[in-house]
Each structure stands twice: as structure tokens, then as C-alpha cells.
Image (cartoon, rainbow, N blue to C red; front, side, top):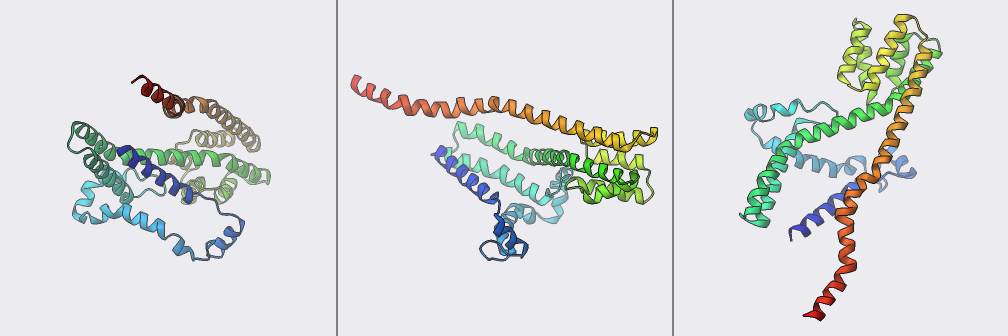
Length: 290
């Protein structure tokens, strides 16, 4: 019974995620630009489901008295380093994940030995869930920054070829760089405009966004200007290297795909195939023997 409930829950979650990630077609995009969805409903009504889910997720944080919020959720503030992560959401995820699975396990198995073993493990997982969410969100955020770097380098290269100096090219690239790299660059430009040295602003930018390729780009720009090298050649070499490195990463990920598919194949697909093919014959043989 527990396996059936778990499979149904997983199916509902996968279906809901699939519906949310459906890409709109051309007509729907035009209607979105006009402020309507494909069904003719306004955009506010279209986001009602998301607001309801967010309200349910943030409910434990809102029910917590204001006196205890700082003490209970002080550590969660340090984890909110990427856009989209807030203390109410992390607190709600922690509370629901800490209380929900152990209660389900106790209701399904009662106060038996397996329940007493699995419930503390599920509770510990719920307590660690905010850290896992924050780490995964930060990794995705930095990966998005890494993907936006080649385009930013091309924009810098275009400004330098147009006769701009380093400050002007960096300012133009910050305005036109795609998210999530653009806000980091614009903050560095703002610091330079307020009187900070370029090297210090670049160092703080590398600390806020610890991407190895970005740090390499900033150091290359500083060294090229310091030694009098042409910025265009430096950016050209960097763009070529970062694209080659990205290609090698994609090839490596593609080579690892069969190895990652081996575990589901052996532990999930193969047992089901064996049961479907050999199971009926084995049961018929047992009926004949006994």
C-alpha cells in the first residue's frame, strides 16, 4: 500500500512539473505580451496556482510568532544568496519536510520497528533540506552565469573593436549582458562610478560570483591593460578558449550519460522486465508441480 501511495504521489508531482514547464507557442506568446494567456484569462489569474502554492509553502513561517522567527530561522538567512530563495520559503520547506514524511511513515507502518528507524532519518533529511536546496540553487545560478560568459565576452569584444576603452566597454557590456551575469556586472560598474578602483571592483565581483571563467576574464583584462596588450586579442583568445572548454564539458557529460543510465536500467527496468517475462512461466510451473 505504501508503494502504491508513493508511486501515485510521484506521478502527480511529475505531471504538475511537466505542465508548468510547457513552452508557449507563438500565438500564446503574443497574447502574453498583451497581458493575457492563451485561454483569454488575465495574467493575474494565470499565476493563481503559483501564488497558492507559495502561500502554502510560506504558511509555517507566517504562523511562527515574530519573537521566535529570528532565533529559529537565523541560519536560513545565510543560505539566501541566489535570486528566488527567501527565508519564508526555506523555512516552509524545512517545516513541511521535517514533519510531513515522518507522520506519513508512522501512519503507514504504525509504531513498528521500521517506522521508528525511518522516521528519524526522514526528519534529519527535512532539517538538511534547506541546505540542499540552497546548494543546488547556487550551483544552477553559477552555471547560468558560466553559460552567459561567452555572449558577454563577445559584447566586450564588439565594444573594444568599436574604439571604446576598458571602462566604456565594460559599462556597455554590463548594460547588455544577459541575466544572471548582468546584475553582477552592473554592480561592479556602480562601484567604479562611486570611486572604487577597477582592480578592487573586479576582485569583489569575483568574490560575489565565484566562477573560474569570470575570474580569468577579469584578470586577463587587467593584465592586458597593465602590460599594454591589445584588449581585442585578449578577448578573442578568451572567447575561443571558453567555447572550447564548454564543448569539452558537454562531451564529458555526454560520455557520462550511459554510466548514469546503468543504475536505473539494472535496478528498475531489468527487474520489471524479468518479472513480466519469467514471472508467468514460473507461476504456471509452480501450479503444475504442486
